[in-house]
Image 1 (cartoon, rainbow, N blue to C red):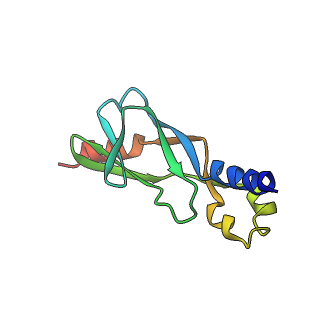
Image 2 (tube, helix red, strand yellow; image 1 turned 180 degrees about the vertical axis):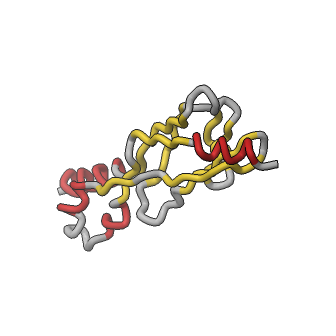
Image 3 (cartoon, one colour; image 1 turned 60 degrees about the horizontal axis):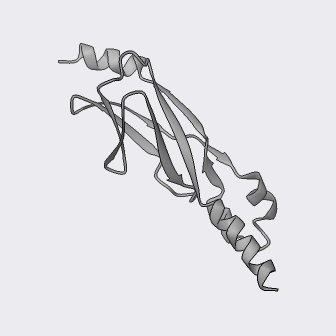
Amino acid sequence: MKKLTILPLLLFLLQCTSTANVKLLPTNEVSGIETIWKNKTVGKGSDFSIKVSSFLFEDRNLFFLKDGKPIGKGELKITPSVPLLLLGWIPLGIPYLWLATVSEQQTFDLTVDLKRAAESP
C-alpha cells in the first residue's frame, strides 16, 4: 500500500520544475547583454539555461539589459502538461496548479530592441 502512495507523489514532484534553454538573437550582437529574472542575473550572452518552477502563477518575465540599461523584455513560453491535464483531477485537482511547464527551447530575437537602444541617446 505504501508503494502505491509513494509512486504518485514521486511523479508529482518530478513535474514541479523544468529547465528552459534560452537563446538570444542575433548571436553576434548579444555578448554584453544580461538577462534578469526575479531581480537576479540568470544569463549573460546568447545561450544559457534557467530552472523554472512549473507552478501556474510563476513569474516568467525576463528583462534584458545592455551596459546596465534596459533594452527589452520577454516572457518564457509555457506548454500544458498533458499527464496532469488527464490525471490531475484524481488527487482533488491540486496538481492543476502545476500545469504550466516551461517550453524547453526558448528563443528571443532582440534585433529590434538593439536597434532602438542604439538610436536612443
